[in-house]
Length: 379
Image 1 (tube, rainbow, N blue to C red):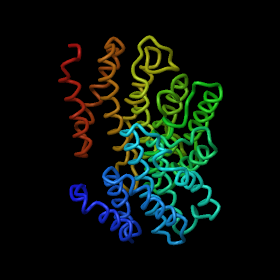
Image 2: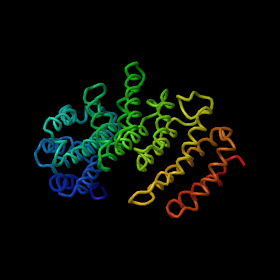
Image 3: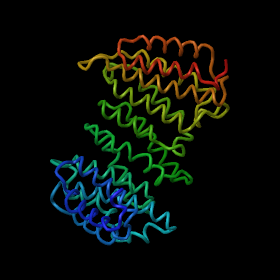
Image 4: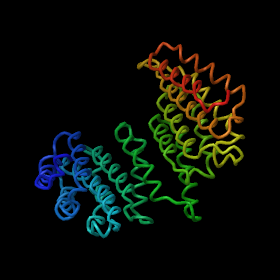
């Protein structure tokens, strides 16, 4: 970026990235190339539209895996950058980029599916790249609202969110928040029905027979925006709390329980503290004790496997979630906290501060100190 801002170097740097780095053998270099092209787009937006995007679209259709992967990543980042540039110029993205690139993006998932490129060798690269494309197109506000491609993208993200490989899952989870925010609204009866179907599907997924599925669906529930959670908060939070219960099938699923706790933290932050509201809307008097007890009980997770004390992941996630929840509560209405809850909370934090794992002690100590010395807290 620092070198590219000089006009005599800008297009040469872009051409070098396009010709030499987009199809580099190392996936990390391909990812960095896409990010570099994003940064350079603001310096030569028309050059990107006229010269770079057509070449990337051709590479996306090719048979070489690394070239196809790099092209999708780069196109995703450039489209996002062009959307930012269009906003600065008070233009419509479609007017700036043209119809042909948008049609290519819209048909990409179907083409890859038809050519069976999501399966077999290289399928993971295509899934990860498609998740990034969905994320960036959502951030860019690409005008696909109400079109079949939105349901296609939703299906891909759902499949990737429960995939065995962590990098595929994380790419899908990162794409969900902007995707939901841009393409899902509940201001119509159809939108409300879609919301109900999504919540039912994801909450039932917490009862799956595989840890990765439970983990993935919990992560997706944590990505739901406020508009999709309102009216369904009680259903979602109850399902997540039930997912923390130990059974013979899930007793070793520490990662899934950690994901559930973190999803609870995200949902609580999204809906906020509403003392006198209905339980279906957010955290209120009628459900706050249940939420606290579930998170405090999670501090009893001492699951052990070949990796050691994996329950520590759950305990640490619970500590940070309890900290965030408590800070939100006292900011709004400290009377929501009962003496029983506070006593239990502080004693459990002290217990975790004396654990044998350094990392856990640090999290517990930091949480304890943050709550103790918070100036806005009531004495």
